[in-house]
Amino acid sequence: MQRIPPATILIIDDNETALNIRKMVLEVAGYSVLTASDVALAMQLFTASAVDIVISDHLLEGKTGTELAAEMKRLNPAIPIVIVSGLVEAPEGMEHADLFIVKGEAPPIWLKKISGLLQQSRCQAPHSKARGAGPT
Image (cartoon, rainbow, N blue to C red; front, side):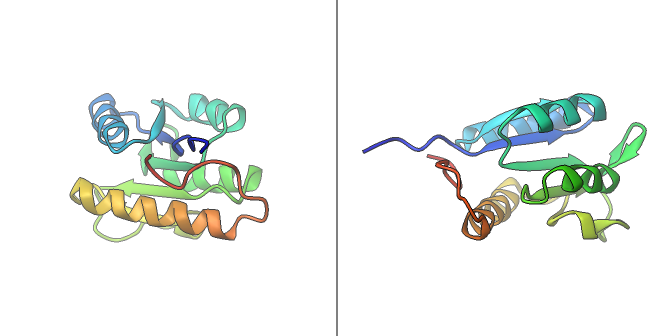
């Protein structure tokens, strides 16, 4: 039986500590992770890599996460985008994103939400990739 590769997640955060913590949690959970600490690198990775989902901090230098989500959705509306913020309520512009996660939420909770979003995305995709919806 052919092994299905893990989903690839692009994480965007200009806070290196937060970026590295999320990366570590996701890799331990079995995902393949790409990271970007600025909007330019995020867009480069988004357009050049086979990304299955994007997780972006909301407050980025020069652009909000929801503005970045709108730009990414124009390029590829099928890729789910998650906004992470310290705000208690979803920020303005969330219509461009698929999920909102509060920064203080425990990793098992947001991992479950991300896995569910990936599975939902796979089911709705017209031509499903031969990639897994979650960790292997």
